[in-house]
Length: 313
Image 1 (tube, helix red, strand yellow):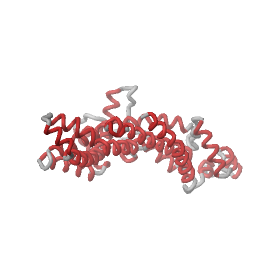
Image 2 (tube, helix red, strand yellow):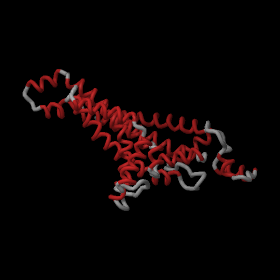
Image 3 (cartoon, rainbow, N blue to C red):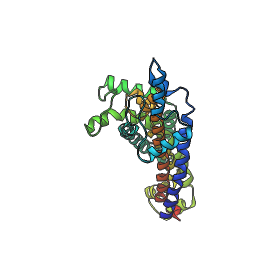
Image 4 (tube, rainbow, N blue to C red):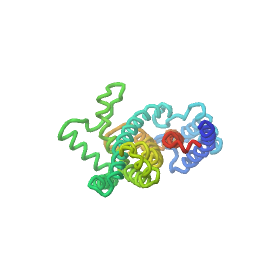
């Protein structure tokens, strides 16, 4: 496993380099001039020239990229042009919020989606199978904003059990933090659970019809052992892939859900940065998100080997 991890880590270097080039290059295609926006309504030519010099906007694009990469490699993602705050501080402030929300959402999705997919495959063509498929269709078809509003109306307005919006850090009050994030986490996890259910069901049906599963049953093993120890571990590969990709998507910021529940995460940060032409923040957030995707794919490869020993060779 160590040689494999070494090769994958070496592959990350050129991948991250090309990602950084794409991020910086596409950033230059955005309309608008940040110097004009920062100069205000007067737009004094001297002020504009000073802003361009301060942020090196008067330099050629390759030179700007070199300066940006030097800062990134030293842990400096630049400074927000709008609020005059280091981008790294903004990322470290918002990332734990989105990470908590994404972690809770993917946990809900795995418990519901994988569990329903296994039950649906084991009890194929029964009412449990039909019920699980109906749940999957409902989860995929339900818009997040509608489900979020419905949950707020039910659990906040009518029952008064949960706060309608806002966010509390776990370090301040763990119980209040869970109460403020359980509804947006369920909204996000609901759709992912539906997709995971369909993938799990398909993989389990294929594995359950294989020869080694029939052999395990012929040997007199308990059905629970056959399903959980023999079938499920071999059916986890597509589920692990999908789970890693969905977690990466959640870490990039669930914009609509965060807006509905007023959660100050990555989604709100990136939307505000795009609207205000805050290039440094956009570049920093997208770079962190891309790095998270690449890291999660590496962790998914490791999980393949842990779930299926045959892949270690």
